[in-house]
Length: 110
Length: 114
Image (cartoon, each protein chain N blue to C red):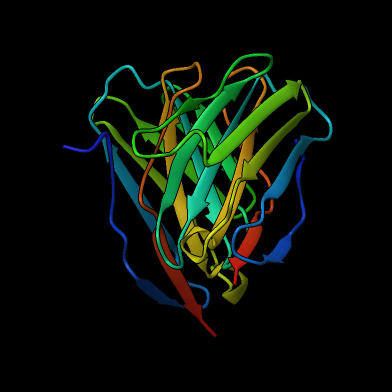
């Protein structure tokens, strides 16, 4: 079993929709949770960073961590065509070992 | 937010030559830097992890004599692809971590070996 599981999609939604992206994990020691956005031919860009459980909101983006279920989510409200990208989840226990999901490809249709 | 730069952004070279890619953390000290390789529409593949002043730790299957990594300072790491061949053509991305809580990625370097 992989440390981090992420549905690769592709996911296609109409502009203005709420998007839900998810990852599950198996290691209960993970404490740091990240979401990255990667546009084609670019490096990943850190979107959200959460320590331990709970919610974090930044503009149209909300990150949720449910450690009891080993499940993290990224919600995008009022999705825009510019949100079309691949979204990667990542997590770590702290230290220098990070575990990435395979990425979910999102297309927002105007 | 933390900024990581990479240079060059794109390089084309002849088979057999060596190519050096620089990765710099511009506004923070990077205790650890990571080098990834990514094929089109594929996931990131971690190649190696380097700590400042130490030898890099390579992932299984990555040739350390082929991909030379130097992390000489807290703001600079370099990846040298030695005797590059067409199969080394790929998108190489570095990232940097300050205190081990998260990684900040560079914009990537596209390598084409003819």
